[in-house]
Figure 1 (cartoon, rainbow, N blue to C red):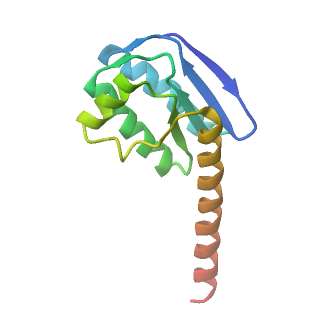
Figure 2: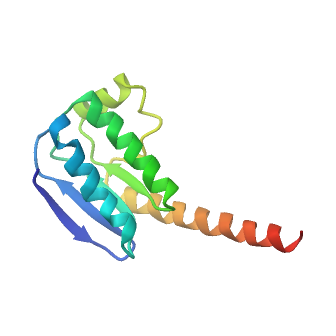
Length: 132
């Protein structure tokens, strides 16, 4: 699987460079993304602008991958999803679950909002613990 990696201050953009992503590529994609949960910059934006075809199992794998990132206190956002790919997410009832934006800039906004949310929730936990 071909992809380009661009590390920013708060997130890493992984740009998929292949038009078709199929089942046999799922493990490589998953392993590539999950390595970032062990990095200092944990948030990942997956740019799917060049992808025109995915299988239903890849759609499911991306939803599970997003869940893994949330469990690791990190963000996972898909951007630039083509209509044919979005249709697969909708067919799998994942359209409302997958964190997706039209552009990388909007993905950055989501990463920032989720980081603020995590900080606030962590702060609430600390306040709550001190009142016990």
